[in-house]
Length: 157
Image (tube, rainbow, N blue to C red; front, side, top):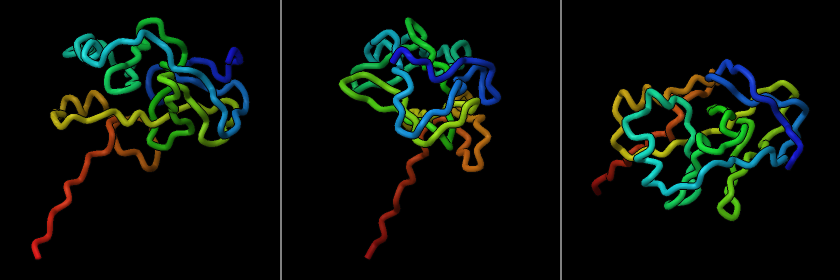
């Protein structure tokens, strides 16, 4: 995958983003998400209480034991922003993470995928603010965190 499908530049969504340098067809594998592979516990420790200094989401969960920290040895994939109406998705294959186009992307269009960051049920208003979404999509849910699970009420019979 030596062919570069995008360039990094200032983004209206957040900080920097990846913008298509050519038309990218649906189904194209665009880039591998790389960085230092660490345990989930190490990832939690590395960024615990330090959210304000690390506004970019750089950890990508590979499995229940491993995350990729793109802040250490990462590539341009770390600049692909979140969107509630994405044009890309991530695919985990043999413990490697790839970004693929889920629709045809026009030259100049910003690449984005839904981060769907995992909730653990302890999110505070500060956490919600930290992971606020700025994608501007009509269907924006307002957060990069996965949608809140709605508890189903049991109906007594």
